[in-house]
Image 1 (spheres, one colour):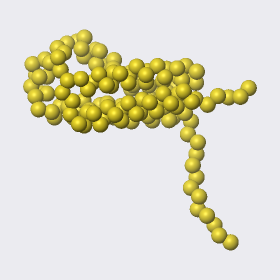
Image 2 (cartoon, rainbow, N blue to C red; image 1 turned 30 degrees about the vertical axis):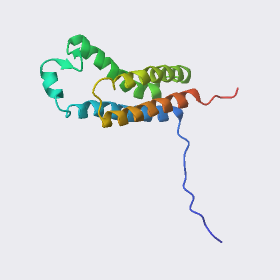
Image 3 (cartoon, rainbow, N blue to C red; image 1 turned 90 degrees about the horizontal axis):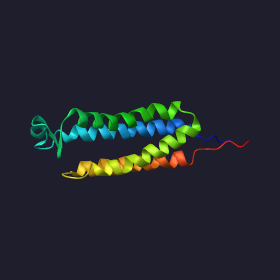
Image 4 (cartoon, helix red, strand yellow; image 1 turned 135 degrees about the vertical axis):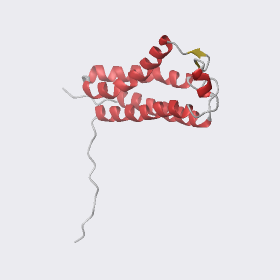
Length: 139
């Protein structure tokens, strides 16, 4: 008589999968900007009111905040929205964010930024995959 230790694995709801992927995405998204502060010349440029080729203004900061707020809200919305709206919201937002993440590599990009962008795009593709494959209920 032998006993086997089989690990139990529970099925995770797609809403929780999406919320956790958006959370992982946000950590990378924030840390890339944080680590950018350590790149030579960045603080000097910020002190004279520049980020890359953009002037730091209330419009620039508003747009930047919108692009941070959207994936931040997606963490909550992925859990709170009803399935049909949730699916399409995740598909649309993740699809829009892929070219935006790649746009962030324009200009001086260091290896850590390429690595983060690759992981961010992979996470966004995973969001698209899970949203696209959202389980259907048989009626």
